[in-house]
Amino acid sequence: MFHDLPVLRRLHGRPARLLRRWLALSLLLGGLVALFLPASARGAPGTPTVVSARDLPAGTLLRTGDLKLVDVPEDVRPQGATGQATSVEGRLLVGAARAGEPLTDVRVVNAAVPGTGDPESSTVPVRLADAGIAALLRPGQRVDVVAAAEAGREASVLASTAVVAAVGEQETAEAKHPRAGSKGPLVLLSLPTAIATRVAATSLERSLTVTLR
Image 1 (cartoon, rainbow, N blue to C red):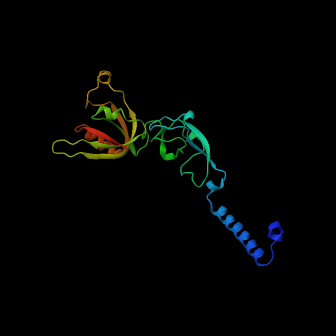
Image 2 (cartoon, one colour):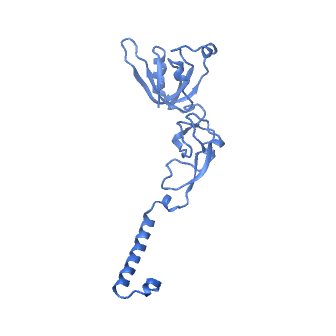
Image 3 (cartoon, helix red, strand yellow):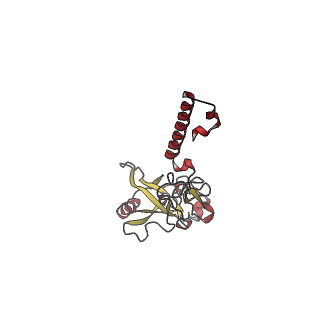
């Protein structure tokens, strides 16, 4: 096909052959580049995916206005993503999400108390040593439970990645006139049953706090 190009009609002999080879090589390289480009770079159609419509803080109870459906190329679509907004509506966001971030199955938990009805987990109420820390907690957030240091005892981690199920209301008088170091409201934590039992027992004799994840 290259011999039909006007510029080649004016060339003869070796220059024409070299130019034809150069054009053929250019087309071949262009085809190879297009072949190995990821689908996202080639503008290939994506898969409908539910993403956050705006920046969302941890513990957000997801509503229709928090979500939107966009096409995401399959090669960059994270595992566990969904194309059905109804599968995440009404659920709690475990961690903060940026606008446009796909909401995968590990980023949301049921709005109901986690662990309820699950024979492998239990929900234990604890009252944290500092009301200020309890005020930072949101349902669905993951925390580590720590027993505070006391005479003859070092601080120790009792449980890792506990899920905050709910945060109770602070007592009226304490809420109006909070004191530094005052104990906070009850916090419900979902944990494996064996660990929940240990946390409950320890809370009767030692002060507890949590570290945020």
